[in-house]
Length: 125
Image 1 (cartoon, rainbow, N blue to C red):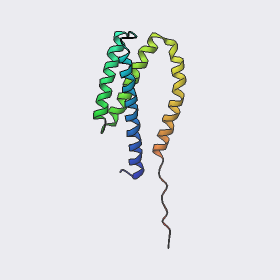
Image 2 (image 1 turned 90 degrees about the vertical axis):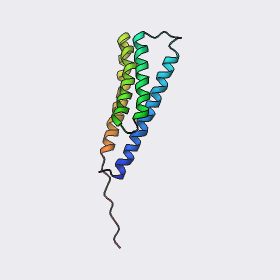
Image 3 (image 1 turned 45 degrees about the vertical axis):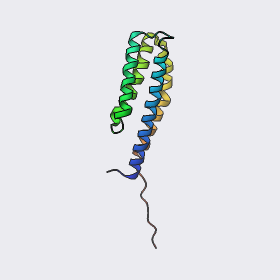
Image 4 (image 1 turned 60 degrees about the vertical axis):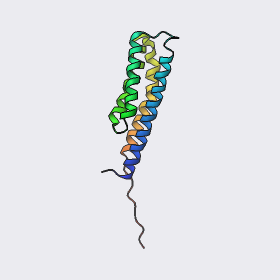
C-alpha cells in the first residue's frame, strides 16, 4: 500500500537517480570529447561508449524501472573507476576515503526511508 510519505520518498528517489544519470552522462560525454586530446586506451573507449549507451537507455526507460536507473549508475561508475584503478593501484586509497561519506549517506537514506510517520491524533471537540 502506498502511503503519502512513501509516494513522496519515491519521488525523491526518482529525482535523485535521474540527477545522477544526467551527471554521469555529462561526465561520459566530456570524457569522450577529450578522447582525441588525451588518447584513451581502447578498452576505456569501448567501456565509455557502452556506459553512455546504457545511461541514455536508462534515462528513457528508467522512468518506470528503478532497477534500470540504479544499475546504469553503478555500471557507468564502475566502467570509469575500475580501469583507472587497475592501471594505477595507488588510486584505490582516495577512492576508499571517498566511499566513507557515501556509505554514511546511503545508510542515512535507508533509515529515513523506513521511518514510519507518526499517527495523527484528531482533536476532540
